[in-house]
Length: 406
Image 1 (cartoon, rainbow, N blue to C red):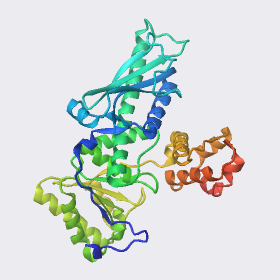
Image 2: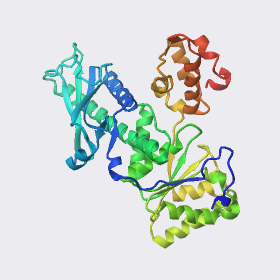
Image 3: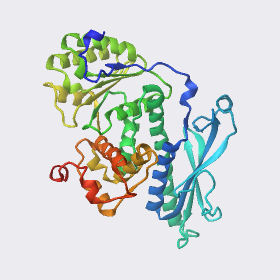
Image 4: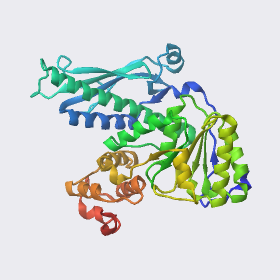
């Protein structure tokens, strides 16, 4: 089938197949520094939003091959097979202290809320009000705080689901791709993915470069399938017109029982798109099901891409839209993203930005979105000699501002 594709400059595989692995491997995720960083983002945001002194979460973990894992099943047999050590409670706090109970938590005054995942108890949220706040005897304040804490618990569960996508990306798909942040826009995107994942129609993912189209596709796949089943990814830019039908037939065979993700659908010629359109229609008539035995996902190269004649109308009639926000719509995530990249890419080098430098970062229009922001942080980790980066140094590594400020 290799001759059916154009040779890409990067020599990337034209289709990626995921084979069935040990099913126990999908039942927990490692509680490592990345997971802790993502959870702390949620806790700090929640503590600030609710006016709390401290917000923490306790999670049930096991030690497996020397690493702490969050258990995502309520089955002692799997725990016994996986764990070389004992089940333990691990605490992550909005404060800097981790791994042991925070001394600032007063259990007599703290509010608690269970955190449940797939009908099992993962742990509890612990909320410590400020010293100048008392909710005792005020039912209305108690109700509002409980509602706010439930929203934080839901965000933690979504973080776990997002991290599962990352876990599969690392150990199954062979790369690392996941969303960072806790903005309202990103939370709404998580909710939209949860809804679309269980609709019985194809999904077209619309987003510009660097907005996470592959992440979105894998998130839809992971939300729909709890077990590890085929996720087949192919880039339409590498297809030859004369071979589109044979490519589709092969890809559908590989993706049976799982997901087929066709990237850059708008890159197809009018002839190539007509073949895809007719083939999908035949599959539907044959199976009597909009999805059949394959979950079909598309992506476009740009959010407003048009493609071959009739493509826009066909997608509107046959697929649900998933619009990915650009970084300009996720300005509240910029600080979380920058700090996460410093932590991940800095090789132990830590630095911060002055107030005006932070303001500039949040004002910029990033043409390539998160990818471009990540490259900037990576450059700064190499050139920074001071613990605090000011606007003068920052501007040396930015493109002309009249192009990026919007």
